[in-house]
Amino acid sequence: MSMTFAERTRYEDEARAAWNGAPAAWIIALAQAADTDGVKATAGAIGYSATTIYEVIRAQYKGSLANVETACRAALMRDRVPCPVLGEITGAECLKAQSRKVRPVNSTEVKLARRCPRCIYNKGKSNDQR
Image 1 (cartoon, one colour):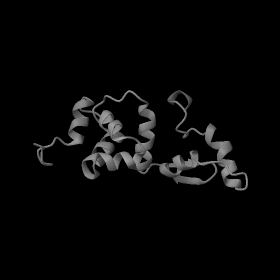
Image 2 (image 1 turned 180 degrees about the vertical axis):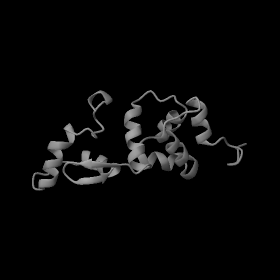
Image 3 (image 1 turned 90 degrees about the horizontal axis):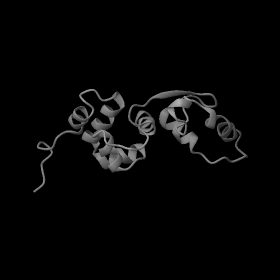
């Protein structure tokens, strides 16, 4: 017998309990998105699996929380970042620019390919490099 929505614990409540009552703002945003849109849709929005969403909310994720945070801030919190090539862009646009393939016929993509790896907003950098 499955629970109704009203009977199920909200993900936001689970996050608060798992993170000792004080989860980071991005974890709250993740849990609220899971409550509102569902875990599968939220996972698709940030580019991670539903399992990752569950584990982060429950403070059990063993991977890079910094990378999940970057994806959440970009997709759910609409953070804006100053790009040295494109100007002020959303975090989602920044992540997209980082993953572009370089086509030498497009000067903007060549500039991005040169600058993105060294940028403080590059998701591939660890927190120590930022």
